[in-house]
Amino acid sequence: MTVSPPLTSRIPSWINPSRLMPRDVLSVVFIVVLGILVLAALFAPWLTPYPADANGATHPLQSLHAPSAQHWFGTDGVGRDILTRVVFGARTSLIVVIAVLLFSIVFGTLTGVIAGYAGGVVRDVIMRITDIFLAFPALLLALALALVLPRGIPTLIICVAITWWPWYTRLAASVAASISRRGYVDSARTLGVSAQRIVLRHVLPNSLTPVIVQASLDAGGIILVVATLSYLGLGVSEPTPEWGLMVQQGQALITTNWWVVTFPALAILITAFSFNMLGEGLRVSLDPKKAGR
Amino acid sequence: MTRFVLYRVAQSLFVVVGVVLLTFVIVRLVPGDPAVGYAGSRATPGQLAAAREKLGLDGSVFTQLQHYIADLLNGDLGVSIHTRQTVVADLTHFVPASIELVLFAMVIAVPVGFAIGRFAARHHGKAADIVMRIMTVLAVSFPAFWLGLILQTTFASTLGWFPIAGEYTSSLDGTSPLHVWTNLTLVDAAITGNGPVFLSTLQHLVLPGLVVAAYPVGAIAQLTRAGLTEELGQDHIRTVRALGFSSREVIGRFAMRPVLSPILTLIALVFAYSLVNAFIVESIFNWPGVGRYTTEAIQSLDTPAIAGVTLVVAIIYVLINLVVDIAQAFIDPRVRVQ
Image (cartoon, rainbow over all chains, first blue to last red; front, side, top):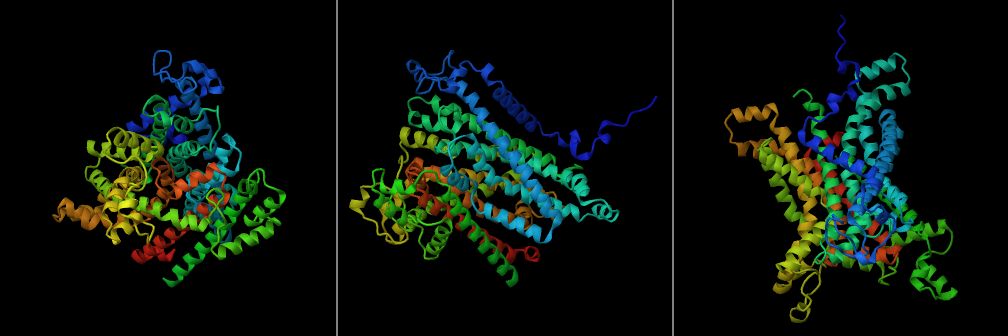
């Protein structure tokens, strides 16, 4: 009878599930919360009671109903079901978060690895360009850009992505620089392994862990920036459901009809909080310094 | 050391040039015609041309850039479309109020965040630590506009403990008028001995100050906790403990020192972040700062104002970073070598 080697030894260490799985119970809780959010966003048309309310339907006769069996979260000023709009709003937020992170990670990691591995003038040019973008607080550059571009989800993505990618360039560059100085990479180079292969086999996989942690921490920040831009009237426009926009529209009613503001605002808080807690948990459990403990 | 400082200054100058170019590109992207916004939709072609000239919109892109840079070097940021004053005049009026709000928030946030982080590190892994961890993450996840609305409705509208909005009670302008020196109302009131305005401003600062302070408290507490926890696990700290130093001394004399330098960097970063975060808080509490100015500028597509704000805040940000880096190099010799 042959004994098969333990599963983990066959998997490269950087995708080893026992390293990626947070040991922290809290992190698991927030993975579940975020999982529910993603599923709700995916199946919103089937899960929500009044899907038409997400696309411009209005019911003036049912304006500002308090939460009830028909409308769990109540209705807004034009009689739309708030539960429906909050669930559909998750789509808007998650699409923007995913698109921004995807762009930032791909573009940032690419430029970062080039900078870190190449060094010299290439590194200096790339890093000075990131310096310029990092000189703007994220919300400020996004705000200035959102003002001049047409309203909509693509604009939101562009505005946030343009302020976000430099962090990944820096992160990847520092990891790449430290790895390309390691002994085994030197050996590989001496053995005539191509630069392309070294980057793909050694530098990129090693940059992945810090990038994942950063992405999870950033998702919370992106949720807040998107909500803030929409709150200022620079995000999506009616009737697209967006949490920040819903808060802005309901804020005048906060003392008389509390539910109009409270539910979308809670959605922002819970989503940002879950991403931040998850990122925090991952940062601790993926910290190489603590790997042995 | 001199080499390091010169290098950092040159680097910052390069960034400022980049920032100027980027701001110019953003302003050029504006759809519609800002000259129409300035001169009004029923302006004659002659009035439009005059408005275009006044706003620096005549000529090719290259001449516009030349004019833009020449104006900047003369300290001219153009004319705001919604206030009809020069952007520089507007900013000298509004920026100090914002800085006052953020400074007030930081005065609360730095000691509180520090104390929370220290407390959590001392009770690492216990219930108190976990509660503090959740609270600090909550503080950085709270949308500022919602926290502002909650505090305003609870403590101002309902309980009436604090004023709802504004800088100070406007009737005081009649009874004890304020002499403006620095545009920082608290400072002006203090140096001119204007007690009523000072107290009133302080009362008006509490709620918006707390909202702006939420994020820095969370961020500072998290970094202090993480740094101290790691430091307390080190071998030399164990030795110090074995030598019989009290828990308070172990933290205060030994573990805290290496943690201070990253916290200093964080405070600088968070200050700039809060300046922009204050934008939203100011419009809720009607605080006469650059945020309220910006939100009003957004409503009227006031690009010169937005460009001016963007440029000034970015330059403040670059300067803060420069100062912190140089300070770090003085404190920590390892920074200089890089």
